[in-house]
Length: 65
Image (cartoon, rainbow, N blue to C red; front, side, top):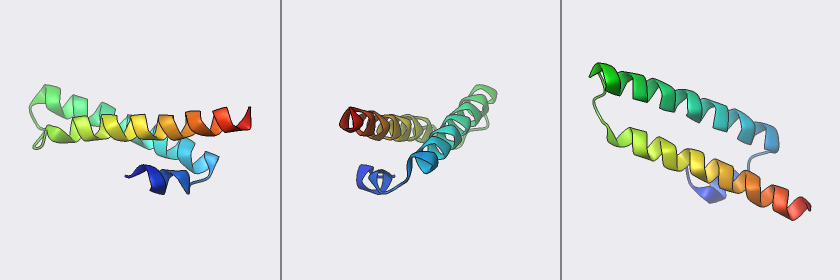
């Protein structure tokens, strides 16, 4: 998901997206540890998506101050 798409989401939607991405990352790491993960590149992509969401949240908090 791209940053402009994330900026269009409400704060509640961003929080839900962050929770979903963290859960997905946990599942991917679990699959990787058990040897069931088909595409290990998804772990890196999910980490980047989490960072994007956190960046948008931080930017909004900075704007509010």
